Image (cartoon, rainbow, N blue to C red; front, side):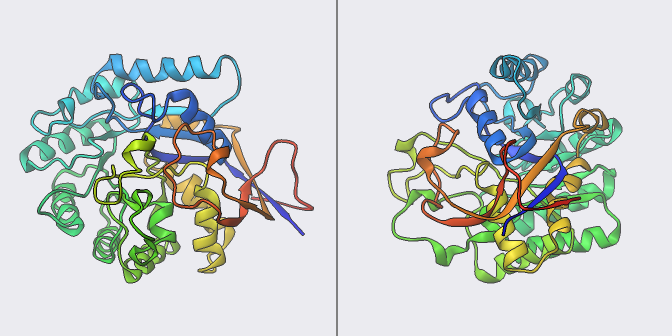
Length: 355
């Protein structure tokens, strides 16, 4: 017998729509269609577009693209983030004040770690004055995830800036975040569906669909990330990263980093945390709706009023990438079956249960 749940609208605070830049991988229209199919009320787009989203004009471009995609129809809200540094080059802090006034969700150079400590410190001091979050990609050549997080925690401590760590993947990284939260630092972090479901042992053959950044880690790392979610220390985010087929069909070593995740995120995280780890459904759902709201500006949170996410559990469905609304197909879950899915508007479970 199936069961229905309804929660405040789920938010994905980490998606890539490749618009502008690589429309063959994803457009705003196809990305929002994937978000709707996946059960999301809102998404935060990353600024690693071409050109980078480091200006008011680029923020406006993304909003206009979302409006054109809607064409008067209901769809998930799109909240664009903006760059920490000009051009995402890590050398000069972007005009954070103007970007904040224009409604940037938060600041990030996603895909690029801000290596220069003085640059990151200036950005965090200015973001703290604005009351906005700095979201950091904790991965860089020659530095471990823990090294990156440790440096940024020291800056968080000095500046008082709210810090969000993207796609955490290691036990060491989770431990640092937990310690920082116990210390009272304004630190949050996110776990992706792929890092809670998979580990490096799950990589099958020379398949580029398993290549991502950060890479899949060990079973112990996966267990630590799951434990961080169960403790309420980590929120969920997909890092939805579409690529043209040719960039993923060239073998693991040469493949571009990243997989799509919007249309499979809810069933995957439900499987990993609720079914396999025994996490209460309400607590699991909070990692998709409550915790993401804490890192967004109040005005954006207010715009979500009345939006909900409805789920049905107990009606298994098989992942068929050919049926995705996303333009991309770089997904390692083809053929897998999951029990928890977003409910279409006309679908109800036999036993209603509301949050």
